[in-house]
Length: 260
Image 1 (cartoon, rainbow, N blue to C red):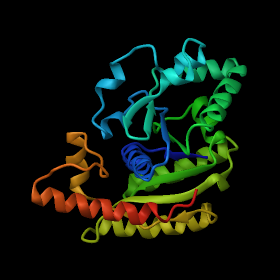
Image 2 (tube, one colour):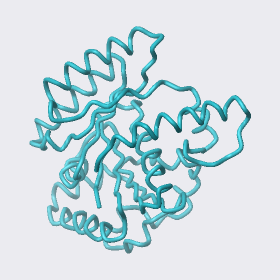
Image 3 (cartoon, rainbow, N blue to C red):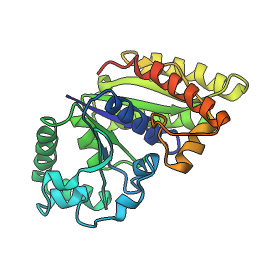
Image 4 (spheres, rainbow, N blue to C red):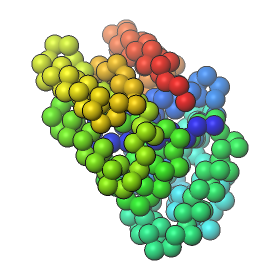
């Protein structure tokens, strides 16, 4: 079992999309996958068109288990075969509780240990903001992936992420992969950003592997608007079907490089 965090101190870089597609990819291979949302917006549900399940029940948030008011099984929300999500309600309040009641950290670590007996992969999705909960989940993680948007703000987010690790004494060597996102061979800015990112990775995280950039594809937003994952088997118009097939091919090539 591997616990994998997908993180970046910058919003809108594609963390949630990446983790959703990665989780579904593993699930399609027959692996048991759990994705924990540490983001109160619970955007991961939108990737699979399951927004209604966020509010379907108001007593199965992560915080209810931490407070001793729910069992581990109560939190699991199925969204695809072999794929389950866990939602959060108020991570700011939870983080404050973790800060003042350190015994609560043991509850979270025990939860991960228990889930590890049922799942092959546990993936953690974060908001761009940070908190004590963020620190704990990153500490628990076996591997960390950093998604970086290929623009000036995205590069700033990468640097802020590195600084966050340093400031909070998190292990930089836990960062295993850097994933550039939003590449376009026809635009200058992503090319220049990728070159600068290559330099920064070599300087700050030489132990991490910089993966091939993910292309900026409009089909991703179109699929998300319909609640369709890249790995869903659905009927689409010929043009969209071709774009989805190319996206799926690109993602498979990328995910096959990952070793967890």
